[in-house]
Image (cartoon, rainbow, N blue to C red; front, top):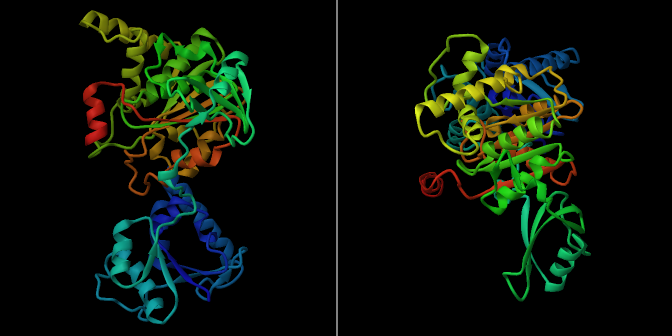
Length: 439
C-alpha cells in the first residue's frame, strides 16, 4: 500500500532533493507550502537557493501533467499539490496559521483512511500532528547516529611482543585489525597496561609511528593524546580534509590556527590561511552592523582574533596594555599582508580556493549540503579543516545527528585523504572544563 508523505516547508528548505526521497509513495505538498516557498525564493542564502530549486523542479513536473491530480516522478513516486479548500477537514485548530493549514491536509487524508506520515523538521509541528493521531517523522536521509559517531581513535589490547616489534621497526602489520585509514590506536600490553604505544593506521591492517616533527605547531605543544593526534592530522599534507569535534575549550580552533600558521609562514606549504564561520548569533541578533565587509565580519570573527592574539604571543597571555597592543598589531599585520583572510561563508559559493589552508569554524551550524558546497570549493593544493561542537547548535533545524559536521565525519570515514579526531578534555581552563562537564 502506498503511503502519503505530507511534507512541511522546512523539509524542502533543508534539502531540495527531499521531494524525490520517498520512492514508490505519494508526496503531498499543501498549498501553504508553495506560498511559503514563494516568500523564501528571493533570499540569497541557502534557504533561498533550496526554495528556487524546489520551485524549478515543481515547474518541470507541471509540464508532465496536472499537479492537482498527481504527477509521476522519476523514482516511481507521485507528487501532488493540494489546495486547502472546503474539502479539507479542520481538526479544530486555528486555520490562520500556515503550519495548521498544512496539518489539516495531513488530517484530511488520515480521516479518509489513507496511511499518512507527516514529515517536518519542526518539533512543535510534529507534536501537534502526533496529538491529532497522525504518524510523524523527521527527515532522516542525511542523519547519522551521533551516539555511534566515529571518534578517530581506539584502544587495543595486544601482546607485548607486538608493541616491541612496533617500536623496533616503526611499522607493524597485523592480520584482522580492521582499521580505518588515519585512525589512531593506543596499543596496550595485555599483561602490563603501562606498556603502550600510540600508532596511526595507514591501511586496514598496518600501523606506523607518529611523526616526531608533528608534535608541536607554532610553539604550541599538545596537552593530551587527542591533541597530539589532532596535530598529526593538521600538519600532514597528505590529509586534505580534517574534521575536529569537541566541546568548548578542547583546543579545536587554537590547534587548527597554530597548524595553519606553521604550514603557511614556517613551512611555506600554502599561500595563505582562509578562515570562515557561519554567521548565526547566540541569543537575540543585534541587527545590521556598520562599516564595510571586513568591519562587519570583525564582530563575528572575534573568537578567531582571540586565538590569533594568543598564538602571536607564543602561547602567552598579555600581561599589560602595551603587550596587548603589540599582539594586536602583529595580528593586524597578518591580515594586512593577506597571510590570514577572513571570509563570510556567503561569499565562498562560486569560488575556487587553491593552495590555501582553509578553516571552517563552528561547522556544526551548517547543513550537509552547505558543507558539501564549501568542500567542493577546494582547488589544487588546498587543505580543509572543519571544527565544531555538535552539542552547541544554534541552527533551529539541525541537531547533533543531522548537522553537516557530523554527517561529513561519517560519510568521509575510511578515505585516506580524511582524518578525524573527537577531542574530549577541556584545556582552556579548569572553569571551562567544569562548564563543559556539568552545565
